[in-house]
Image (cartoon, rainbow, N blue to C red; front, side):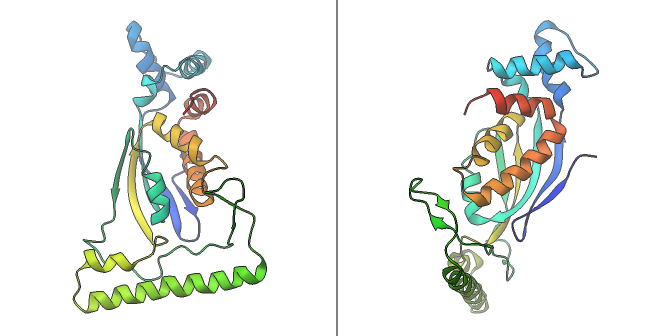
Length: 226
């Protein structure tokens, strides 16, 4: 049985909901050019997959799909949803449902602003600053949720009340993606320049994808450039 669920961060997860195809699907999509099809995957197919990726013949990799159910902080999804090609997203709507309490991300450690990678982070703040940051973080998030609930109780519509909620609030998304697009996401978001939080999700996605498409994912990550 393939890996179907992994916990990520303090309250998040990645679940494999569905998938279509296998490494064999990729080689059969390629071999249809010659009117051929195989029923079992063998060593020659592995070599063909490597050849396809190495020479940028990527269309056969797009005859596959994976659907994930993901729970992540909103700021993670805002980065994730930049991956638009061969990706479809459907998200929980704050217009339709009321957000629950205590569903926000709280970092275990607080990092320093990086000096070289200006948009990134490095190391950790000192212990005293970390304790203060943790308390301030919790207070701010909890207060935002309290005010959100108060607005709802006053009769304010959900679509306006949600505006006070923090970017660390957890949301849930269905994400359907081709194998090639999944590999592109994994390559970029497991890179050390990506934010640590989304790296954790990308590693979870990678573990699930490589169980289903081990030869194809390896070839795409090694050969196809962003």
